[in-house]
Length: 119
Image 1: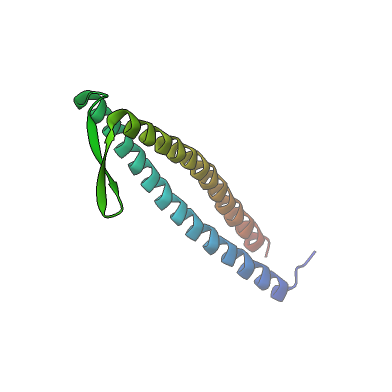
Image 2: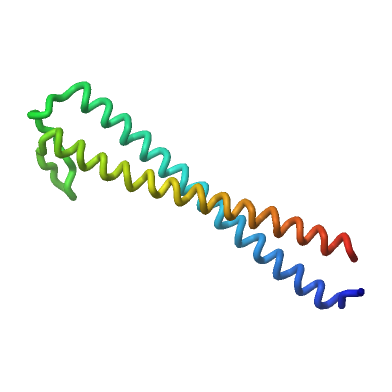
């Protein structure tokens, strides 16, 4: 069974467009994942340092807009733990999205190769 060359060309162009879109999304996903991992590392380092250096009744300075407010270390550590949970959830979601996009790329390339190979 022969495929119309114009239809094949149109299909390949659409697949190429999808391929480029997936590559761009994968690149953005990788960047977001790197930033999330960096933020998690900063949070973990901060927690370790604060736990080792400060007592629970001491205060730390937290930036709020253009000012700084002194808050108890325990409260600040709770805030950091909440942020850590959000970043961990975000990291999990980004890893799933990355796997999906990588699979999409592989499948699109395989299908394009098969179409060109049949011709």
